[in-house]
Image (cartoon, rainbow over all chains, first blue to last red; front, top):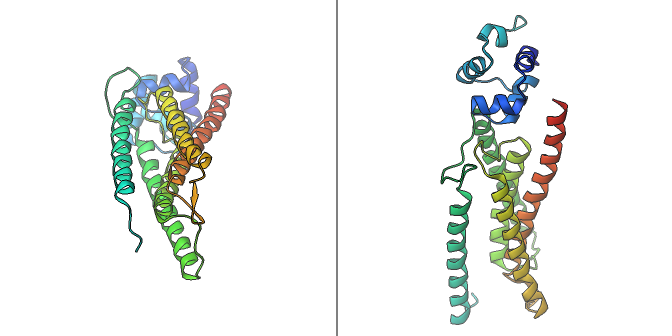
Length: 66
Length: 182
C-alpha cells in the first residue's frame, strides 16, 4: 500500500527522495520503495525517517486498513 | 589423460598469478568510497535483504546450468570447448545471475559506492579481456583440434563485464526518469 503520508511530508519539507535517503543513510530506491508500498521498513529506519521529517510514527506510518 | 607441456604449465601458472594480482589491485582501487577513503561498500537494510535473494538466484542459476551441462554430457554430446572454458562458464553464469538480480532490484550499488570509478574499471576489464582472445584469433590458435581454447575464458569474462555495464546503463536511464517523475 502506497505511503502517501510520507510523500506529502517529504514534499512539505521540500526534500527530494535523494535528500531524504541521504538524511536517513539509505539508498534513494529504498525511499522510493517505501513510498510505493513495495517495502516495509524496520522500526529503526521508520524512526530515522520520522526524525528527518520532524513527524511522529503515527503521522507517517499508521495505517487504519491493516 | 592429456599431458601439459612444461611451457604451457608455466604459462597457466603465470596467467593465474597475474590474474590474482590484478584482481587484488582492482579490489583495492574499487574499495575507495565516494569521499575517496578506503572502505567497504555499505548497503541499507532493504539492499542487504535483496542481496541475500540475489545470491540465491545466482546459486540456483549455477545449479541449473550445471544440470544442463551434465544432461548434455549424459546424452553423449561433446561440446567443442576445452574443459577450463566450461568450468569458468559455470562461475560466470552464477555471477551474471546474481549481479543482474541485484542490479535490477537496486541492491548492486552501495550507499557509499563510487559508481563512476567502478564503471571505468568495469569497462577497462572488459576491454582487456576482449583484446586477449583477439590475439589468439589472429594467429589462428583460438580453436585448436576442433575445440575452442582457454582464451575463450577471457572472451566470456569480457562479455560478462559488458553485460553488467549495459544492464547498469539501462537501469540508470530508467531510474533517472523515475527521479524526474517523483
